[in-house]
Length: 216
Figure 1 (cartoon, one colour):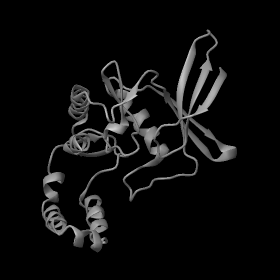
Figure 2: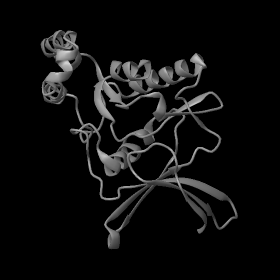
Figure 3: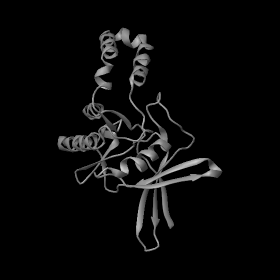
Figure 4: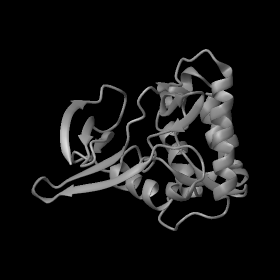
């Protein structure tokens, strides 16, 4: 494989990334999206799992999903740099859903998520992180450690109290694979088809969380 070009990826990502164009022995040109660990591990209070976790999601979970998606090509580990690289399709010609005025594209993305939720309901590998009471409580504690914010918006305390009392609604609902950050910025559109990317926050949780994310 000959590397024809490499250039930094200018889009939004937690990790450094680049676009790599390669020429295969048969002359075919392959354009890949490469995401690097760069010494960055899981972050955001356990919400994000990092590049190594995302690789496992692509390789061991999403590979079985019969929906349009960016193909996973593999991973590389460079021992001399202690560096991990995720390689997947670069979806040329795609655009971000963020800010798009066409509501039908949002509906297409929501339908994609619904089909994924149905496919994985009650069935994900054991390594996938779980939204349990301890996970939800982390976010309650974070809010309660911001008294100035609550003081400026007193209704937040009622919301926090309600959430604490009703976590069981979430833990008792049907559980499935969720993207975890199913926001418009993490959804690419090509030919009106949704391609969710950035799976480092995938989890086993109620599908309604993805729906809330895309509505937001």
